[in-house]
Length: 132
Image 1 (cartoon, rainbow, N blue to C red):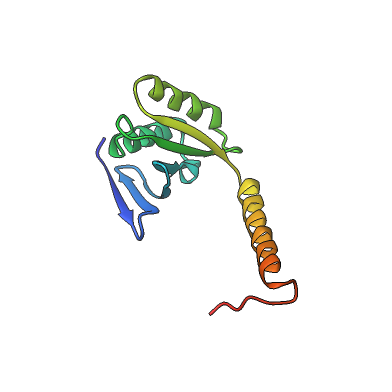
Image 2: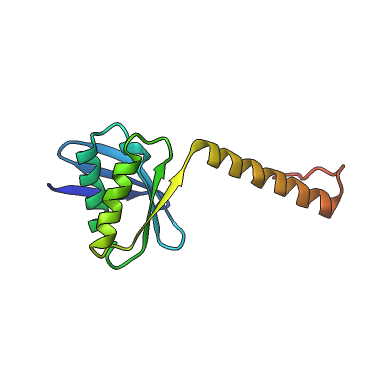
């Protein structure tokens, strides 16, 4: 089935379109592509697998390492993981990363706490940083 992928903005957003769906998807570019599957969660598993295969083709995962990010609470997490493992066995350079809203929140909290501690260490606890 024919599909198109259009990279948006700074390259972290993309629009995936085929005859059946139009999805806004996310990716990042740190040490290879990191593709997020959370916007496909409402689709049936065979359609999700088709989209993954198309993403693999588009991003040339046989030549370039790619990480597929799957939410820990995804109903198809295990099945998608097995499908990605099969693709890896067929020569695709794929890694699976599990993510969750809780993990993202904890990371942001840790980052904020670390920034505050560094600021207090450098400038003292009573000094406020002025932004712009």
